[in-house]
Image (cartoon, rainbow, N blue to C red; front, side, top):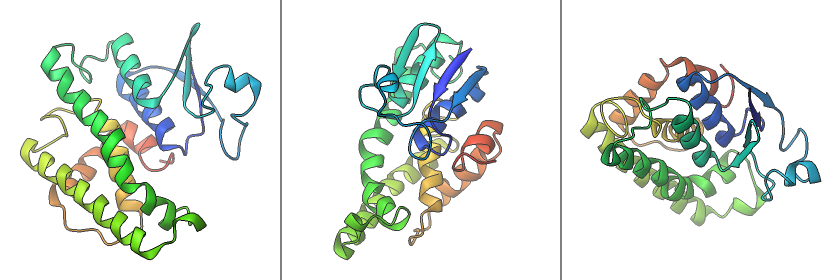
Length: 207
């Protein structure tokens, strides 16, 4: 059985858990990370030298990096309905997965650390205002895309890209800041909330 190492409250661990539900992969999860077993131990570092969760063990195969993990799981376990094999359809899904990791994540990091984690190093008012504005700008990009597709981020069907994007949308709505009116994002959030995997793992690891 697939072994997943990482606490369920981690947004990156939840990517893997939600993907497993969508694909239909049974798994066992172990609590690792802040508040649980340390990722700085020799045992964990032998699996991931970056000391970060999630990590999966699939038989004798070890893999880290959440987006690499969900792509691997979809490719290995008959997840073509989420991650197409046709080159252009697959590239469209990859485009939005990579956008979430490279652009959207960076846009919300300062605001999230300030407003949710209350980090003392992230309390500069000007930097916070700039971060909130940048986050809103990226969510407006997503809103336009969702308005164009009318359904999901890469098209009219749910795909692997909706897992990381959907979790980021949850983070957006759960962070206490001024949210511009983004009707397509709001509709998308409700649409995702009807999925069993999202109800289990989409809202901070609690049903």
